[in-house]
Length: 364
Image (cartoon, rainbow, N blue to C red; front, top):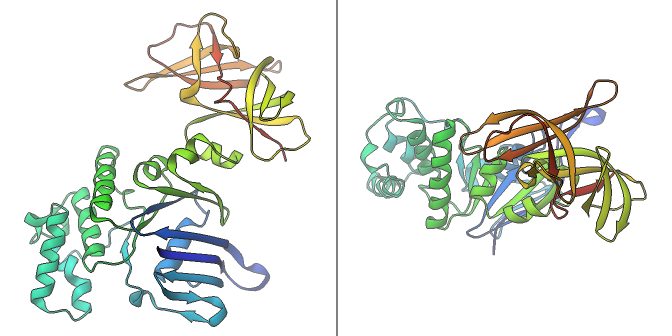
């Protein structure tokens, strides 16, 4: 059963000819116990979609349904206020009351619902214990770490057992190390409690780690959706391929094609590739290959191009090496990044581009 359904949602800012279309017919579903990440660049519409579901933005048309209850229907002019949608919302800034204790922050929503003091205390205690905050109930927000403040914000969203929890960039205020720890904690919590969650993020690693399904938005529309693995390994469009992962983008010419297989001319060499996306009659193409898929050799190998080493950067567990040649006019020509286990000596190297990992997207 769907906990949340969005159907052909349109939302504009402004009116008339100057209206700026933010959502252009977005449809999606969130199943019970599922975590869906809204991923995309700034301005793609992901936060606007979350806010529309929450009741904080008014769509122009379409429909939003929570369980079997319609909360927005443009055709019927129906729009249920945010406070009556019974959704849990975790803000990017956490939005904790600085003058209230952890327990008072978490229980504030229950107090507004006129629940008895004893029931509030019981529910607050239960949810704080679930999140490992039971010993911090009497502290104030400024006495907590960033990770603890984040957990308090999540506890406040969970305390009244909402059918869906909405997370707006929930880890963006944490430093890199704490972010990795919080990512694991959040995923474990969501699975353990069987939550249905819709999460906005611009961090693809965060989306892949936490979600069961990713909706990639581009210019107000869903570009592609699927499991994290399918989005990363089998992108349908050039936009998806470039957005997911760390990539090399190379201009290419298609010399031969046979079904989904092709021979490309890249940097003066010929390599085999896999055609992806919608086909066209043009021979111009853009080739994409993940940085981690390239194999480096100091001797000639199959399906490879030869480039001089420009620099190597130490990343701790590996070296990131940049290979670059120059055009005849002196400008940068082909540039490729690849990982190596050790620092490479100056010189030229063969860079193998495996056929299954070298994707060619034809120009429209």
